[in-house]
Length: 253
Image (cartoon, rainbow, N blue to C red; front, side):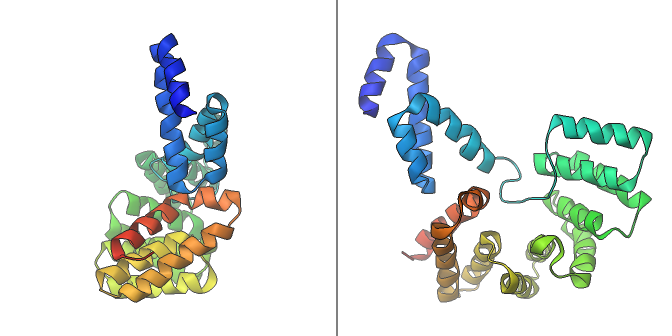
């Protein structure tokens, strides 16, 4: 059917041929991610479903902060609202909330400035400390991130539903403190089943030559993904794809 589509497109317009190539790209991506229903929809009616897949699935999992998340809306209206509130009230919460929006958009320099401004006004807020620490980690400033993340995670190991401790584990890995990173990943997985935690723990296992532990952990990611709701599959898709890749590299099924 796709071959026929290409023949028809090439007869009419180069632009339509380009769309055919785009639809094929989206179809291949859907198959690679295991998005079988999307693949069927794209195959049956590409003009509508290929663009929908691009915006709802592909682009959502391909941004600069894919696989990482902080709460908060990411819209122009929300940014304008927070900027106006900061202009009139200049309180710590609004600076921190604006930092969260910029963080999620991948505008880390702007986020860092907002978090600093929030901590200048309310230095002991654990949410701001944790999010600032995550921002510093993504900026490659792991040593600075460590102090903030350790402080919050020690006071509340399940802060932000475990995301702060996951960032701490990533920071420890970046600093070469592998034993502590593994201990933190295991603590996260005692309370949660995040693919992000399992995949990075498996990477550390593989680096240590602990192949069996890595394979078990990666297979758990794929098993959970099979039964996960659609929103969770979209959110953790990047980590599931990485789990498949690591399994192939490690010789797993």
